[in-house]
Length: 446
Image (cartoon, rainbow, N blue to C red; front, top):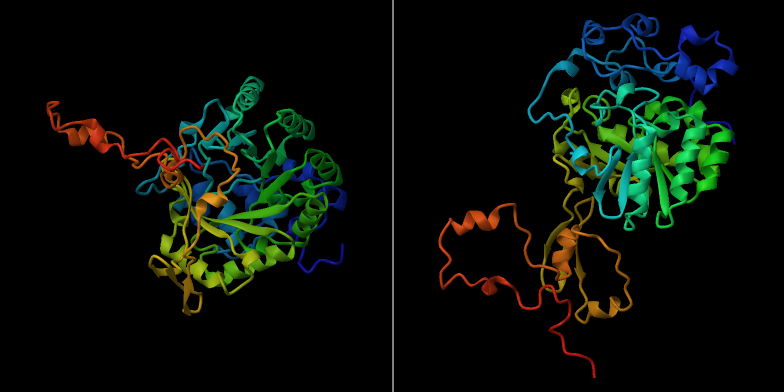
């Protein structure tokens, strides 16, 4: 690989650490910092940080020597610092704060498995990370060794996947799968690959960012045995993109693993279009495709990181059209209560009629797109293959004619007003002709 365009840093207290230790991921894990006394050897702590670090019940703190070296030791507003070092603001509750804001546990058929979407599942393989993000959406279990998943629970996860044929995509997360012992991670991947209907496996990991030396040749040699394998990393600020991260990403991509990036919109860290544009452009330079920009979740400790959704829309206005399409992530709200990911973007559709659509671009240029008058969707549908999505057709089901209504729970009971069943209440009045029978009303071909 050519010489890196990015810098490499070590905090002064680590300058005498031999390279064979510094570049060893096990040394990095063993020498993480987690107390005020340890962290103050590297950075000058504020009173707010010291208060948080001594608070009872604080979400776990652990920072690798590599990652803390990226922090400006004298800047309390340093964007890397704010992500991993707690402040007293973390202890302040806020309106709508929830323990499990995404309702993952509600969508968990067996411990450690979240089946929210029709054809894919989230598989939590550990509760441990290399370092701990202060806005962690799973802080209810992450960092707690007693909450990790047992061998019996792992077997339950595998059995569920075996008997659920609509699952074609498994995302490994946690915690962070890349902190697992190599043999354990290899066993998980092997067991998943034994299930015929699982087509792809994805890994969500911040280890390449917190501890890039974990991405060894041995790791990539093992991972590439399980293709198609995808990976999303988690970079929030350009200061996290270093020579070491570039090298780790280079090893992963050379092993045939496509890389994406998931970032979180964080007040005071990256809630600025110039920072976001620099971030996505640097990511593309190291062959990482920006994938999601998440709105911060409603989890305990994250209140001071939250921005209005309007800030995310503003950032997307400054990315779309202003940089390469490859560098533009999808701004997404993971719906509180378990609704899943909802994309949010500026409105580029201004109006439409039966055959025209009026659009505007990033500059405010307004154009008309003439729609076809002879389009026949039935031709495109010939020979289509359906995959079962039990009970989850949603809005698409309305468009396909499977049903005509989606009603809130209790809707019919509420509007019945507890009245009697009388001659005008004939249920057949409200069943649309043809709904549920596909193309039954269409004339049969000769």
